[in-house]
Every structure is written in C-alpha cells, then in structure tokens.
Figure 1 (tube, one colour):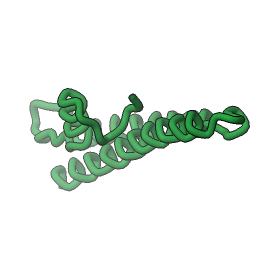
Figure 2: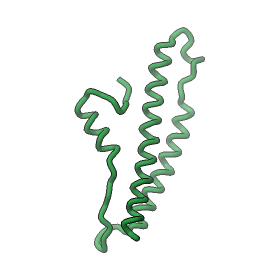
Figure 3: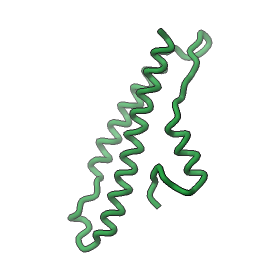
Figure 4: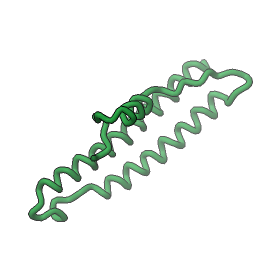
Length: 105
C-alpha cells in the first residue's frame, strides 16, 4: 500500500496527524535560543528541498510502463503522495520558524 495521508491503519493515522502538527518550543533562558531553533529549521528545509529535487528525478515515466497503465498510475500515486508529504513538511517547518520568531520578538 502506498504511503499517503489517507489510510485506515490507526497507527499510520496517528503518525500522519502528528506529522502535520507544529512543534512549538517555549523560548527561555535555559533552552536553545530562538535564532538556533530558526537556523536548524532553515537547514532542515534546505535538506527537504534537496530531497524534493532528487525525488523529482525519480518520477515514474510512461515509457517505463509500456503496456501496464494500471501499474504506472499506481506508481504515480505513490510518487505524488511522497512528494506531497515532503512539501507539506517543508511548509510546516517554515511556519514553526515564523512562530518562533514571533515569540522571540
């Protein structure tokens, strides 16, 4: 079964719900600075973008599925689900950085 956001498996649903929630640390003198939280998230976003660029090179092409349109469609669905997951995480991490920045102001 392809990895996707819609599934009946309760363990996967829990994982997916947690993945789309924000990590929202409380910035204080005893913890990591806001700048360090933001820097780490920006580094992570860069690595996610690199992963998305590499994933784009793995996109299934019809020429590799001659005579097997159902398999091609299935593999495209898997590819797009993976890409959406990375893209969503890329955007969530940006929102976390913005929330941390606002908290630090």
